[in-house]
Image (cartoon, rainbow, N blue to C red; front, side):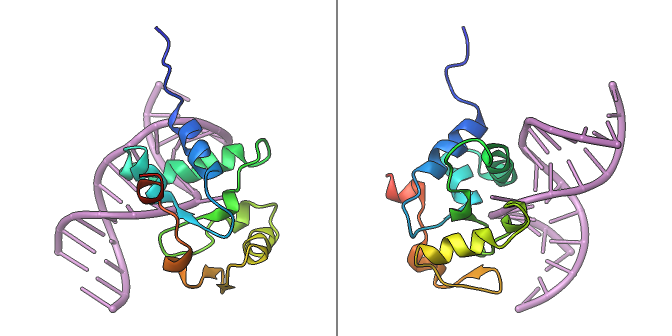
Amino acid sequence: MMKKEHSFFENAKAVAKLIPKGRVCTYGAIAKYLGASKSARMVGWAMNSSLPEENIPAHRVVNRNGLLTGKNHFGGKNNMKELLEDEGLIIVNNQIQQLDDVRWDPSVELL
DNA sequence: TTGCTGACGGAGG
DNA sequence: ACCTCCGCCAGCA
């Protein structure tokens, strides 16, 4: 029978959609929530694959350092930073400040 | 087809 | 504390 489970990419996208406004999530957190903590890279890859298509707030997904590692993929502009700042986040040097205060972990929030 | 790269993160030295 | 390597797996030359 066909695999009912959405692919890892689909799951990653679904979780990204659940990130509340004004919050951020890490690739590792999503990967871990999906049971593949070692595949954090694939989460980012999934985001990239979903960027132009769906309404996924990929700008709310950053690496564990709070660094906007994916800003380069947002059309090559500072869109990612502006989007996050527009949501009330503070970003300096492409890094989210007070990350712990805005962090949103699916394994914790969705628990 | 094989091999390298890449929006990461943890472990080891 | 800092640097390096490994694993994960899809996409591309």
